Length: 407
Image 1 (tube, rainbow, N blue to C red):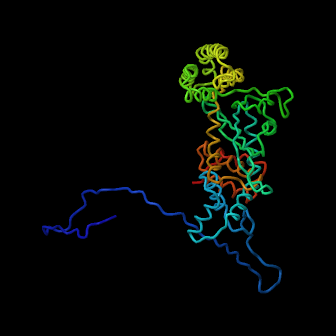
Image 2 (image 1 turned 30 degrees about the vertical axis):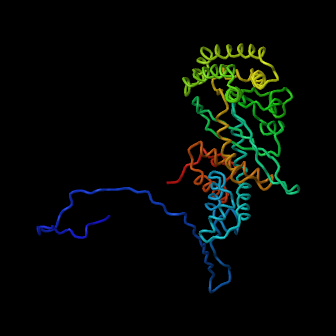
Image 3 (image 1 turned 90 degrees about the vertical axis):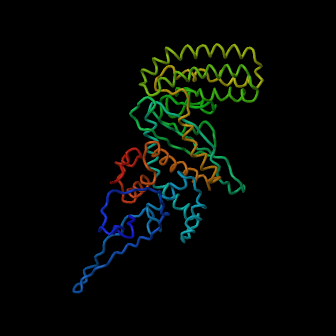
């Protein structure tokens, strides 16, 4: 509030009175503040007898006798896995505030948090696998290989649910499973207990999931991704200007135009519209595809792309038979991008356990984000609840979509 130096009328009439005001708003910022919380527990004893000493119990800590509060740990986790700040950069930022904490210490905090959050992530995975339709994709997660003096290529497999496009009741979620390789048996292991429709790209490692001999459940129904089919043709068109590829892109665009019109409607309405409008377009595309494959050399660049679409033709038609199925797997690809950003900034995980920690914490952060939950508030509350001995039979209370911020 800025007042004039004097309220006396220049004409000598006396004091002026207020007739209004001008108000401005500017954005200001206060840098993050670090504070030390000192907990004092006085001891009491009787001067007359020697029956004992009375002292309040120590408040629950996630790291017994450790330096960080649960809020400090949550901040490190969110900075690393949501804001993609590697631990060495966080160490540098803390040093500017006069706090000397080595990145190895921060890594220890991440490991402890990952250990305690594992039951929550396991329960999140169980919840997702109880669904009848999921997405799956995988991306590289480089990991140090100390014995060889370089990194090895691990993988994070994203298993996701997102039924918001057709108004499903289940909240969206994602779990990232770490594995040291891309072999199909890893996907088979991660999907143990899931029986339903799996929306995926064209990676052949998923083929074992559709076989009667599949371990961990019944054969899975596969829905392949039209965006990947379109991408194959787009690569040829951008490189060669192929008229055949251009025609394929035009036909796929017509199918996507139907999807745009029915977005947000119920599964029944989606399936009816697809049967009436999309099915003829897909059938015509199939006939066009076979005709072009007879014309084009199978060894040419275009021939290889057309063969890719042909190999996945059955799965590309799954969306016509079930209104809950999406036309593509773009939803899960968007959930893989944060992993790629973290990989770009941090370069690698320190070891396989670090890869697992990466997957667990990213699972909770990304699930919180797609449910509109602020990740720091959620992780802080969850870590405090775990430290206080949250009962195992109420673990669902700790899932991100059940989080309710305090007033």
